[in-house]
Length: 426
Image 1 (cartoon, rainbow, N blue to C red):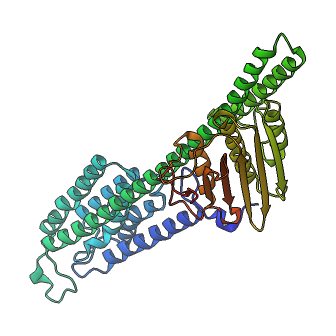
Image 2 (tube, rainbow, N blue to C red):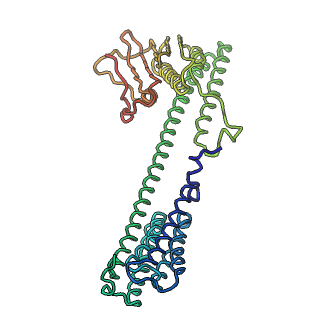
Image 3 (cartoon, rainbow, N blue to C red):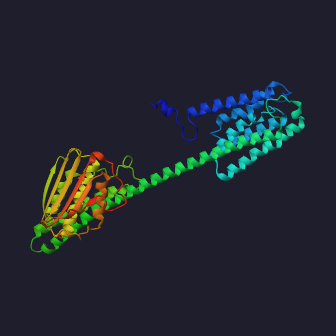
């Protein structure tokens, strides 16, 4: 069941209930004002029957009830009706601008709904009506200011035409400003949407880098091992090939999942073939460590309190550990690596230590500018955390990430610097 607020909102293709009620009320009020001004004007009174005034008022006012749905047809009908009523004398002399108030409202809607060329054209067409009929009215009926010295409004056609022109032009200008603001808001919303798509594609690119970089490094190591021991130790060769098979299958599964986000014709809700397997997390760290142990690296894994991490943080922890271990395999030449993940008190700390080759700390040490470090930095900075990387005094390399996942979105000021939020140890 829809709430009252939802029922009052505008629907695609037309105004909402509130808009229709407001338009109908405005149409009735302006129609009554036009008829009343004709029957009781400051200048000469309408010589014909009263129903003519009411008919003219209805013709210029009531069509406004549908002005939002058909702005140009309503404007055309109302403008012609007002010009005809003026030419026939069915207007209030001295307050002819009252008859043109519905025209101004209709012109506002048309100016807000059309482009610049059409808007200028309709303004010129609307102004042409009173410019031709108001002088004609004064000339035909011989209206002279001297005939009504006590009139409540000046009986000069120049004054009346000027007031009508000001009211109509002001309404047109307001309509153009409203259209400009709507265009700016639509462009801004479109830019926000494009920025969101770009950010998502960057995230997917980082995910693909993590998956491909880790998997291919492990596959390369295992393939090298298998090639060297194929003849002497066939059992270990089969184990290496099995690891290659499992790693490649897992990588392909994750790549298909990420690339599926870019496919507009794939919806997990409607496409039963879409891969619905969960994203990796801390629960997958033992399997990750086991694959690396089979590559000859001793991995000591300690995970505490990570069973209740939010899904996004859980994935971030896995990716940081995965990238750190990939760098160990690829660059460090380490024989032993220690991974510690501790979560609690609204934060999680990841520490990866290895005993591989690393330069001794000095003032000239510079951090590597690889995509892996940038990816880890962006993941940690997204949660307002701190990433510390660098060589250990006793040898090897150290990666420490502290993520306060209770403070999501608290820090985005570092997005412009690829090493902001990355600290070098003293």
